[in-house]
Image 1: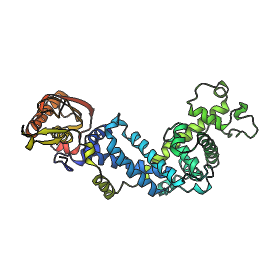
Image 2: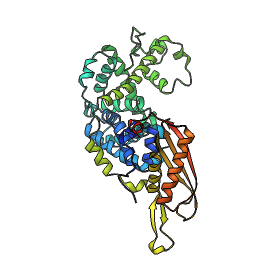
Image 3: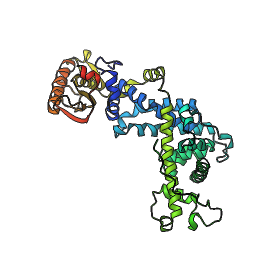
Image 4: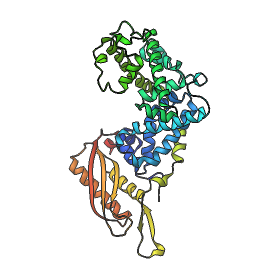
Amino acid sequence: MTTRSPAATPAADSLEAASDAVLAQRAADGDTAAFAALVTRHGPYLRAYAIRLTGSPSDADDALQETLIAAWERLDRLENPAAVRAWLSSILTRKATDRLRARRGFDEPIGTDEGEHEPVAIEAGPDARAETGSQLDALRRALDTLPAVERQCWLLREVGDYRYDEIAEQLGVPSSTVRGALARARQTLLARMEEWR
Amino acid sequence: MTPLEPDRTPTPPAEDGDGDGIGATGYDLAALGEYLDRDCQPPIPAIDESPECQAALDRLRRVRSLSRELVDDDARQQPPLPVEWVRGLLAGLELDVRAGRDIPFGGDDPATRLSITEGAVREVVRGAGDAVPGVLVGGVTLDGDVTTPGAAIGVELRISVALVEPIPDIAEHVRARVTTALLSHTELHVTRIDVTVDDVHVVSREETAR
């Protein structure tokens, strides 16, 4: 017996206000309403990160969907329910990089990034344009000029906090490629940020 | 967005064109980046004592924290996930994976033996706890061999409370409600109900109305 809409589900606003830890524990116990509250709360961040990583809203949406399905199935293995966003982000990283590897294909040489470079699809909104000249906006533009592999290595390192060998494994490239890509990304980003200061 | 501290490095570090590295230390930006990625361990005095290297490290740290802010900023500009998309996702979830063990009930005759899932029992417990004003139940654990009729079962609830009443009173209400609910919906031989207050939350509108 498993019911989808138990009569005792608390009002949506008390779930909306609940802590991540409470929601993650309830979801692990099978409460779909609590899971929905987590999805609603963290979905935009996860989607934004996936778009940055894949450069493609449709790949991002697919990765997000796969992430949430996998998360539901593994919720009982989440050790620290309060850290659910970081946990979801790590699943998402894996799903997104699965797509990147699949998209790149196996035969194509790594490091010839020109063909892979595509602008990141998030359109800077009016608010972002208004802060032109800010460091954040400069970084946004600078990141968009990076070749895809450099951008991905950068995001996995600086936002995802992965080690070089983990990045190499996730992207399916040698560690030396990751080191080189990070070095070039750092060089380019610092130089661009300097120009746009 | 956090305002950035004023720039303390008017001149960009030499980008290793001359082979001497930044501040003539022999370390270029790539090496500094890797040093930063190792949390500056083990210490390299030449880098630690070079103002130019420290300035470059500061710039690298700044662009790191900006990168994190950038994703947060992207997220703020994202519209909420479409309700239809979330609904479709939820409809596609495999509910059985969260169902847990089968708990037999309904008498001794094997021919008419029924079972409910552990997930359903947790739901009963959760609902009973949620019904107490000021309480939102987090995790529910059934401790013991629920698959054997008559086995001694402990029920553990982790709850978040709004401080509408002293915590011991709230916990007592939860125990009473859960006991009643389990008696009416299951045949479990519950020997203890442990309530752990994990968290304190702000009273929601719904709860003030009750």
